[in-house]
Length: 308
Image (cartoon, rainbow, N blue to C red):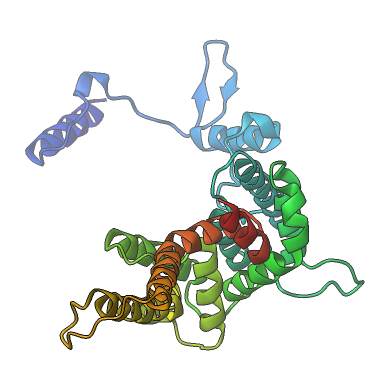
């Protein structure tokens, strides 16, 4: 008994000198391999108690244990369900006047990168993913349903391009390409460069990207986002022509010549009208692209724009 007390005292002093919190000697207890209760019955040794607890845990119902599936891979079937729920929401938003086709393109790009959409045609026939996705979107767009029906095939074809980029295995992250499209487009808008609508931009970038195994540079993406310059060139030409005709009619041109005949006056009037049309074309084109982003075909969008 004396030896045991001395040992306990030494242990306590050595722990204090090492700076480790120690249990005072008077509270220190010795753990035996077996223990006897007051009735003289043998109790389990500590090692046997641990083993018994482990067996109880193994037998416990699943709901009483902490979850262990937090690192399990996502279920593709559930991921596809969730995706189509989002598609329905985008369609509903479009029906309420929101611009949702661009968001549909971005979400489809991510779904393709996750492996739940593809460009493959069903082996047993039927509709491919792009067609199913766009039809689901159009079906929920109650406001524009009558217009989207005619352009469904064309828009599904465009969506197929975006899905195709999402399926590319040569890209480290197809979704990152879409993120860059959004960022560069916002940058161009901030500089008043008037880039293409988001969905149209994604389609053109997807077409360009699928022609290369190397990720597009920012300059290449900006090129895809830039609108055609044909109308701008024509506008400048008509502006130059109008100025020359006006100078000829008024006699204020450097050459000093003057023509105020009825024909000359009519030409000046027609030139001014034509120039005004081209100046309005920038606004018209933006309206057309906005309508196309809502699901209208180009012909339908142009017809609506021309009536405004």
